[in-house]
Amino acid sequence: MTPDQQKRKAAIRALINIAILEGAVLFAVVAFYVNTQDITHLMGGIIASTLIFGPMFFRWFKAHGDAFKPSKPNTE
Image 1 (tube, helix red, strand yellow):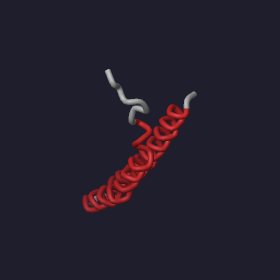
Image 2 (tube, helix red, strand yellow; image 1 turned 90 degrees about the vertical axis):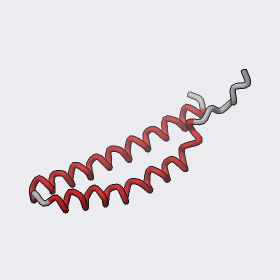
Image 3 (cartoon, helix red, strand yellow; image 1 turned 30 degrees about the vertical axis):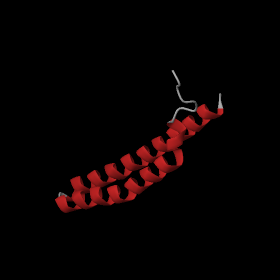
């Protein structure tokens, strides 16, 4: 496995971990909403998860975005 492939694999694994964590938080928000039937809890939970995971995704993109760029430019 080349170093570029290793970087891509690590970046994808990190992105999957972020997505799983966000999914778990959203599942908890929806479960809390179903339990309370209060729409403000649902809206607040979605807004809070966006405020938490939005910057996390942007940090991931800043750290791992270069792993998905081609290593050698096409000159043809």
